[in-house]
Length: 95
Image (tube, rainbow, N blue to C red; front, top):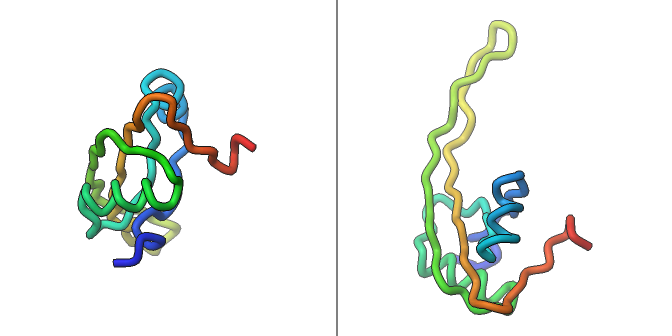
């Protein structure tokens, strides 16, 4: 799997911002089939940082309805990446 396809986007929420400031943890939406080792390698390669640990969570897509049409949101996976001390990732929203 190509490392550019593993990390899909950063997740910017209030909880993610607090974790970033307090514990130096960054949150990403990642490919469902990626494991922790692949995620760690992708973050270290793409952002040129040292990763200390990776935690992942799988989320099941919710059902939704628009008028008489119903369907499901896609399943997705979230990764919380803890960086070594004095390491930092510059995301687009912080520029």
